[in-house]
Length: 113
Length: 115
Image 1 (cartoon, each protein chain N blue to C red):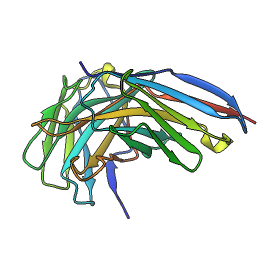
Image 2 (image 1 turned 90 degrees about the vertical axis):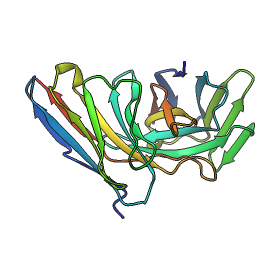
Image 3 (image 1 turned 120 degrees about the horizontal axis):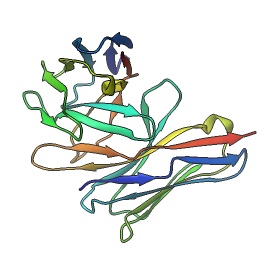
Image 4 (image 1 turned 180 degrees about the vertical axis):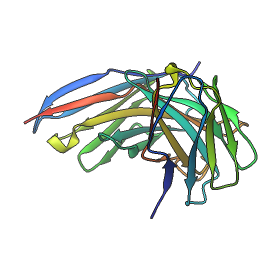
């Protein structure tokens, strides 16, 4: 079945790099995503990677995809207190019934000043 | 620039009561979704509607019904609320993959407590 797993908590010091890891099970996923949720708000897309890519860089964010191991990671360089949030890994599965996105449980990132 | 709008934002129900969560999007998206968010469990898909006129069950559909009223609106109904349905509910919309990234756009959430 479909499953996305990620650790629940990560604590880093301001200025350090954060690395959030995720594993997924469905090798047919077209896109893999990282969403960010700030307190009291809905999720917003942070970045995504297409399944035929190994890496994507977007300013302080680096996404690495290892398709063989079904492993996705998000690295945040120079982590700031404003990066404190819950980060969700997600994959979109397609089919004749339409597309649905499956989320991991979310990793709560704590940034210590 | 409304995006996805959910109502109500907060609701307290007694066990056995019914209610409907409303969701509307103004981005002309084909697909709409209802998720629930519980601590340590992330977001779980309740129902989704790939396009107007279709609905499908997600991971946790029991105790819920949905209606895709038109392209803009997708409602979630609890017929007989139970304490296990205490959660934060999110509506989302997207265009299908295939030429787009499949990004989901979320509402701000509806916080439901069932006593």
